[in-house]
Amino acid sequence: QVQLVESGGGLVKPGGSLRLSCAASGFTFSDYYMSWIRQAPGKGLEWVSYISGSGNTIYYADSVKGRFTISRDNANNSLYLQMNSLRAEDTAVYYCGHIQTSGYPLDYWGQGTLVTVSS
Amino acid sequence: QSALTQPRSVSGSPGQSVTISCTGTSSDVGGYNYVSWYQQHPGKAPKVMIYDVSKRPSGVPDRFSGSKSGNTASLTISGLQAEDEADYYCCSYAGNYPSWVFGGGTKLTVL
Image (cartoon, rainbow over all chains, first blue to last red; front, side):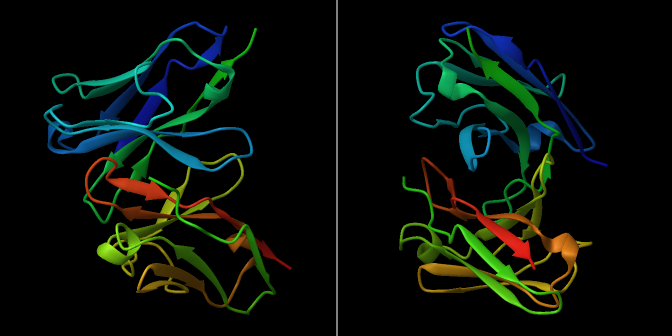
């Protein structure tokens, strides 16, 4: 069955960097778009970034553009999010998500990893 | 791209029905039959309840149904149960860049 397991979250100072990872299993990883979704404490869901199976199509929310970089390693079934120049407002639980189709995005989610940006 | 508009909260008694609306534009909700709904309990990852406007994934009770009219999609939960108390988010395909947008979320309280 499909499993998505995030790692790499933690406490970081403003201006610092962090790299999130998502280990995927149970499906042909390279065939699917993958995404990062975040949820700030007490707030709603926000698309952070997504990437096509080949890596050729990438989207970033305006709030992270120029600071975050999404990437994937299809040989190792892994998704990454490199987060630089972190700000307090980036504090959130970050979820890795599998995108099945245009009408069926996020059929599988990871358990989430907490990123806290604070001095 | 603006977020889709949902009511901040709805409530209902056990056994009743509630409907949560999700209003977008002709560029997202109204333009595609690609609306999905997610249920999130506190401290948990969201779970998809409806996709392609009205389809239910395997395992989701048929008490959950989805529909769409114009630029507004709706999630109806009939026969409310205590375990339905959660936050609900809609999501719509919006074409290219970004391809999807979320609603702001609705808190469902079962009285």
